[in-house]
Length: 331
Image 1 (cartoon, rainbow, N blue to C red):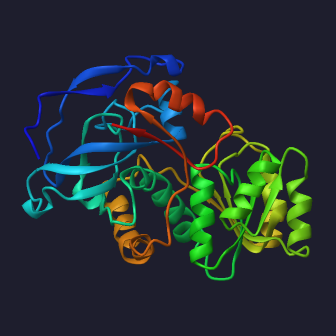
Image 2: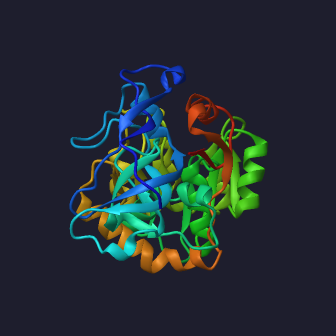
């Protein structure tokens, strides 16, 4: 495994700003604590919360590294207390609270998943953040089940593509929205039952048409703002609405009587600030229910582009452009 250096290259900007502030700097290699492992990072996923942190809108939770990056894949090169030494040398992907854009990072052993030979390290690094988010919100909070129809906004994002892929495996009918005809075609090719171009079509009317007026059982929404009352119009009786981001704004005016009339459930969550016990519980469920599909090659993330760590700025610029699937840094 080689000697572990004292310092490493990392993306750890001193302040907030545009993509240009994402330049490599030298930082100390972290030391794993109790229940943690040190991972030599091979690849790190790029996500919208990283952009929010870069611009000063999403500071790391207490105790988390200021280095960007919420998901990684690599080799375990050191173990902290209470971690089985047999993990040394194992290739894993992991959800981390920060620190992914670096040559080395610390991960909680309970949040690591073994990388099977069906995945490249780039593909493995593109999984944890989106899989933990979609699984905990679509399947746990919204309890989506076999036969349900779900509406996914941002259908070609990392979250959206993961939701489509999981929906295909777990027998959901997925209707997605996307911002171009090409993106809609890409979503359908991945397995979406239907895709709506929100720039040229009224998604409320289209959902009504596609469901014969019944509506959808679940909405997974990353837009917020004025989408919320429109999403309520899309929901069937006893429908569930889960908010996971507010790209369109943090406030909405909602018709309470429709919630009462349809017996709707409105909920939401953020993943990064949740405690280790919650995340470990999600990891256990993913390991038992979802990971066999990964090991058998039935679930692979959609990769849009890869960039070296030195080009993290370009990776963030790409995230703001038309892309389909995940953007990944290679280290």
